[in-house]
Amino acid sequence: MGYSLVYSHGSYESSCGYCNSTFSAKRFGMKATSLNCEDYQDLIDRGWRRSGDYIYKPHMRESCCPQYTIRLDANKFRASKSQRKMINRFNRYIEGTYDPTNKDGDDGDDESSKSNSQQNNSKNKIKAKSGFDLNETIHEAEDQQDWKHRLRIVFERSSFSKEKYELYYKYQTKIHNDEPYEVTEGGFKRFLVNSPLQFETTDKPNTPGYGSFHQCYYLDDKLIAVAVLDVLPKCVSSVYFLYDPEYGFLQIGKYSALREIAMTQEFYNSGLKDLHWYYMGYYIHTCQKMKYKGQYKPSDLLDPETYEWYPFDQCAALLDKHKYVSFANPPTDSEESDSDSDYTYEPPPGMLDPEKITENDIKIVKVYYNGIIRHFYDIPFLKNNENIKNTLKEYFAAVGKELAERMVFNCWR
Image (cartoon, rainbow, N blue to C red; front, side, top):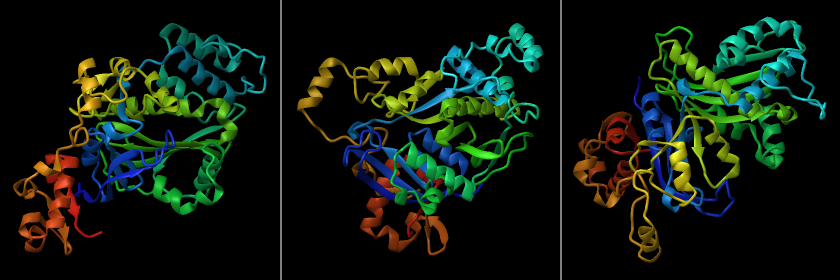
C-alpha cells in the first residue's frame, strides 16, 4: 500500500448542481494523484467524496443544499414489498412474462406474479417456504439461456470503452439535458473512468480487491447500464450510475442499488468482515431526487461535526426543522433565533480553524518536493515560505491530524 499523494485547491464557491443557485455551493477541494483505499475510506467517513481524481468536502453550514454522507448496513437490510416487487418485475421482463407496453396489465405481487411461468414453479415453492432471499432473487435472471432476454453482468476494473462513452452521452443528453457539445470523451474519462485509488488485492476468494470498478449491465449483448463503484476496506461506495433511457421502465437505477447491497453482503460472506456497509453518496433532504436514498433501511447519516453516525429516521425529523443541523448537538429554538442576529465566524463543520493551526502542528506533514518525500519542516525553503505554510495549515485543518500525517502533500502540481 503506497502513500496517498494530494494537492490542495483550498476553499471555493461554485454553482449548485441540485438547486441551480449561482455560487452557493461551498467546498474544500483536493486533487489526488494517488490515493490508497484506507485513506479514502477515512476521508469519506469525514464527509469527503470523489469525482474522478478530484476529492471534495462540502462546507455544510454555508451551502444552499447541505450534503450528508449516508450509509446502509447491508447485513441488516431487508427489502421492502415495493423493492421485492421491482426486482421480480425486472426478472419477469428478462424471462419474457412481463410486458411493459401492457398498461392495463397487473404487474403482480412478489411471488404470485411468477406463478404464471412453468420454468419458475419449483423455485417459487421453495421461496414461499423460506421467504424472500435478496441474493438468490437478484441473480436469478443472469445468463438464462432459455429466457426471452439474456442478462449478463460484468464486474471489471474501471476502464474506458467507446460503448461506455456512447451510453454516457445518451444518458447525459436525454436524462440530464446536457448540451451535446458538453458531453465529451475527455470529460467522461475525467469524471467516471480516471480514479486515483490504488488497486489492492485481498487474500479472500471471490472478492475483486479494493479500488475503482465498473459494473456493466448487458441485455442481449447490448450495454444498457454502468455502475461506477469504489470497493474500500469497509464499504462499497456508489460513485455514479448511468443507463440507457429506453430501459427506464425497468427502474434500473433502483434495481442497481439493490444489486450493490447484495454484492456488499457477498463480499462480507466471502471473508471481508469489515466490509458490510453500502454508501450511496450524499443525502440532501431538500432535494426530492435525492430523498429516495432514505428508503434503504437501516441507514445512518454522518454528523458533520463529530463524525459519528445517527439513525436516518432520527436525522430526518431534525432536517424537517433545520436546513443544517448537527445531530449530536441540535439547536434549541433560542439558539436558532440568536444565530440570526449575532454572527461570529466559525470554520466549516468538521474542520479545524486554520488560524489556530501552529507551525508545530504542521511539522508532521509529509511533502513531495524535488522528487522525494520528506517532512515539511526538514526543507528550509518550505518552512520559511509563508504562503506554503498557510496552505499547509488550511490543508491540516480540512483533513485532520491523522490524515495530514499519513498522506503526502504535493508541493508542486
